[in-house]
Length: 213
Image 1 (cartoon, one colour):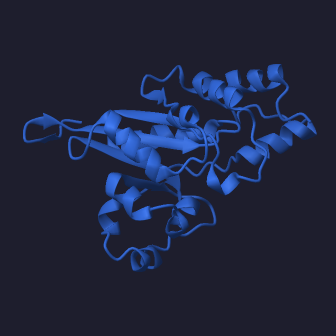
Image 2: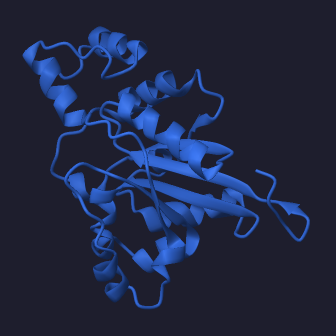
Image 3: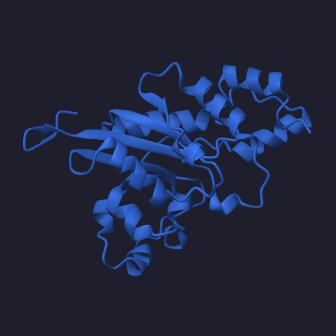
């Protein structure tokens, strides 16, 4: 992008967070499409250490999830891997992560951060830890999820001091109905996952014997 603020270049960075257990084709398509539509300079794939909403769910080791993300993104110069949440450990709260990232990447308005999430996650924004701080530091790039509607009026009522029309961008992307839990189930059942994940991830899952038990 050629946008500037008082002569300074604006860096537009997308953040694609998640458990990535495993990373799949849907993640990659969404990241690429959002980057194109919003003119992002870079998309950071950031595996979570321990997502608060998955505290009681068994999650594959950090080593394996990180390696899968690296393998899946290495052929796209637009994509980078961010290990902040894995390095920090503990529960991964978006507000805390964004504060650290802004210190590292630069503050608005010279750096604009877009947090890429599905409409299902955005609909629960009021239950997030410090949602006002999240929206102060980033814009939410919300992509459609089948069966979910973003309740903007409800969210605005719960966040009266934030202009959600400015801080939430609904981005149209191809509807790819692929879910990580479905992939894990298919592996357990011996069903094919070809085309649901990149070939390099299919091979990694087979080699490491992930999800087979």
